[in-house]
Amino acid sequence: MTNSNGLIMVVEDIPAVRELIELQLQARGFSTLAARDGQEALDLLTYQRPAAIVSDILMPRVDGFSLAHRLRANPQTAMIPLIFLSATYVSQEDETFALNLGAMRFLPKPVDLEELVNALNKALQTPENGPPTLEEREFYVGYRQRLKNKLQQKSQQIARTQQQMAAVAEPLRETYRNALAEAQEQYEEIQRELEAISRLLPPE
Image (cartoon, rainbow, N blue to C red; front, side, top):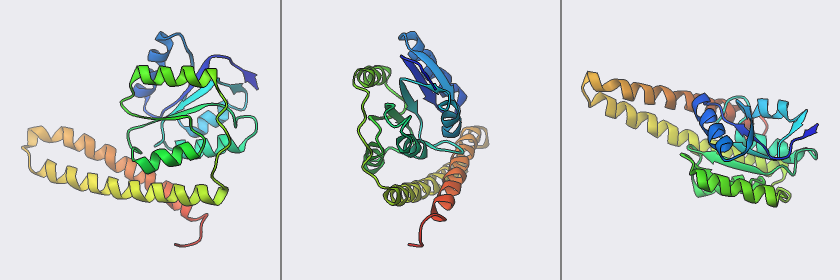
């Protein structure tokens, strides 16, 4: 594994967002390495060790919560500072869960660049994250609850968007269609994650 001092891994599944974060960090003097989801990040970490990781949470294949859990379970990656960015998981419970997984910071999107740079500078100066406080079963139980809450919120969002779209004239509906398609895609991704996690736990 190559130890790359000053290299920041950016884990984000939306290309435009990923590229924007990279460009902003590069403009501040950071080197960056991109991963499209948590699985690609884990693959890259087999041969390269960034100084810190900036990651979205809601992503396909391996999401940010699972990425954090796997990072902390591996002695080779356990101490890499992790900063979460999220536009989907934004509740106080989500933040607490993320910090209990060993994340250093939890920042809402759209991200404030100064806040992100300050968080990275602090992480690079004091990279020790401390051990995660969640045991394996605690992680899966907490993760399942986060997914269930988010699934309910997405269902409500879809219903609201459908109602709003029905109330506007046809020329104005394209924006709602795009928002609805994005919300439905996220709903399906969360549902897949929830089904996978539920198979690992006894019925509630």
